[in-house]
Image (cartoon, rainbow over all chains, first blue to last red):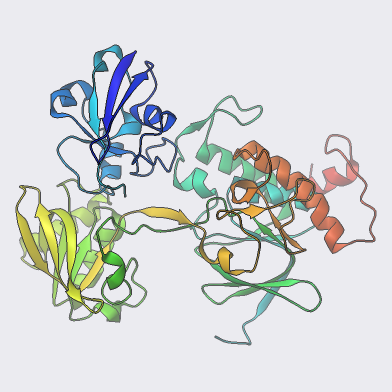
Length: 106
Length: 344
């Protein structure tokens, strides 16, 4: 289990209890976090679940793999902490994770 | 538009060659109906082939695990005896009802196919180039911003900005460079998804000073009356620069859009086609809709549901085409006539 905080573009924070093995995207959709679309349903085939991982957490969430990097090419306003949330799996290590939702999805 | 285009005639025109459209060929074939399929992609499989060819699917009956491509390959094998005809790289632009109750389907290449019945199995719609998330880009589309190159002459002697790092971006960089006044390739990182040979050729052009390569992202387009003059770019280092350009070609992948189906006069409900659950008929007699594109109470967007819909639709389509013929329900396991059709 991990507590994840999603910060919507308008600054509203959403705290969610996420089960291990689920993805950061799935928890956002389940809890209706605004601004995460996940058009392809988590197949790493679009770029509409783009989030910015908080600087303090980028080491724990790890780096995007090649396929995810390719998809990030299609996202809007890529920043150093940019990830596709469908590719971040929840573990106990991520308890307290903070991600920000970008202004818009691709 | 030529009025004399040769018209191909068939029993059923299926719009969409995804898994559900492919399986419809099987069910219709068992009832002796010949099919033509039209798809905007260059190969069969629809989303299975385009979005997740390698991804496993776990909810196909009797296949505990199968990839999108694997499912497509097996469907193609299964429908082979019925010799379906495919029209790839085509978008259906219009459907016109004829006096005899049949339909003539027109593609964006102005081909015409006449079918007694139309089956719309178009999933989430047709795959079309994605509009990049650049504010205000719409006002420049078709004047300065293009998502594909239909006529290279449109780009001659222009300052061209190509955005992207895949094969389309690289191919057009190589093809347009000789006729461009200047060409800039913009990509957010130094890794390219395209064929290694194209990447090498592009880098050679950069070394020779024939094109510019900028690492960064477009943040806005500047110009007036639909004509772009420059693009605002945030470089990888975080600098804000202006890139002069009068033609912009962004390659941001594909997205699904309902497309021209909305204009065919069919009842729509939130971009889906409402159907009944006996025949999967749309509001127009003779036009059926199966798979993710349809909606009805309890609808689940599952491939297996689409297969079921294909089977029932085929019976209804047969009755529509041959209302006086008695349809004898048969099993492939035991019917010698069905086995003959399958060539087993």
